[in-house]
Amino acid sequence: MSLQCGIVGLPNVGKSTLFNCLSNAKAQAANFPFCTIEPNVGVITVPDERLAKLVEIERPASVVPATVEIVDIAGLVKGASKGEGLGNKFLADIRNCDAIIHVLRCFDDDNITHVDGTVDPVRDKLTIDTELQFKDLETIENRYDKEVKKGKAGGDARAKKLVEVMDLYKEALLAGRSARTVALDDNQAEVARDLMLLTTKPVIYVCNVDEASVVKGNKYSDAVREAVKDEQAEVLLIGAGIEADIAELETYEEKQMFLEDLGLEESGVNRLIKAAYRLLGLQTFLTAGPKECRAWTFRKGMKAPQTAGIIHSDFERGFIRAEVIKYDDYVTLGSEAKCREAGKIAVEGKDYVVQDGDIMHFRFNV
Image (cartoon, rainbow, N blue to C red; front, side):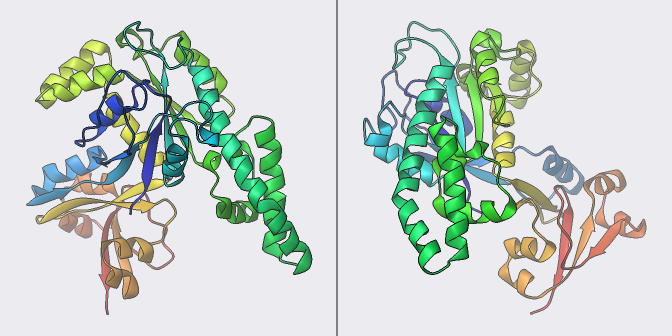
């Protein structure tokens, strides 16, 4: 399931440093604007303590974790919606992503140049929001008259509904609000997808802070939280420089000691990967056995036959039933056989909505 989160932000806020920590693919990191021009794509392993526990139990021959794609996109500047800097490239790259990780500089350092001369993450956020909003207004204006004519001339119900949605979006965008802040009903949301607006994409705000601020934050991150309080968006505190130091450590024990010294239970990178996974609306079902333990990615709300098809199309085409073990039962009892003996395997049909952490075995016939 190929879904991408794009890392965006102004030049020199720490995007590429963060990307390097997330991925084995090394983006260039330097102290000048437009260091990143072509988007770097990294396939990132999703940390999952449940998979690690199953591996302890089964001792399988192979282990396959879930993954998510992270894209490091070129820094944006004012005027991007009109093609300034690398604006057109930035906007095209972000349009191809399913969600946004917006990195904001929340630290002082005279040795690292800020494109606007001073540190102000709320201003930086507004710069990017404004450029994306301008582009979305342009998208709506280019589409609006055509949809109005379709609705009037042919009585096209979908076109009428789309015009209704565009009116709602336009009102918000002209008021300086992103399209994602507009509440839509299910029918409106379905037609709205046709527009592919940039500001409808879900977002996580990453406050790139100094070492002293990774636990409680600082005045800059506090200002960000206040600025985004109405967006229902997650805000994470991460020290990209610290994460780079952690990435250089060789053993798990060394990394944990480093984190404990900082007062952290988990690295910022792990928290960000998990948050990105959730942001994309993704969950995990598991398969376990002596040959392989594997985490499979599926979209939240998918039913058993669809998730079976993620393993192989034949599984969905010839789906008979799904045998489901809850993770807690599997860990408590220690094996599939013992779960079967204890009556802890549920037999589910085509309408079963798979839950995060389900351990699945599919029966099929083709």
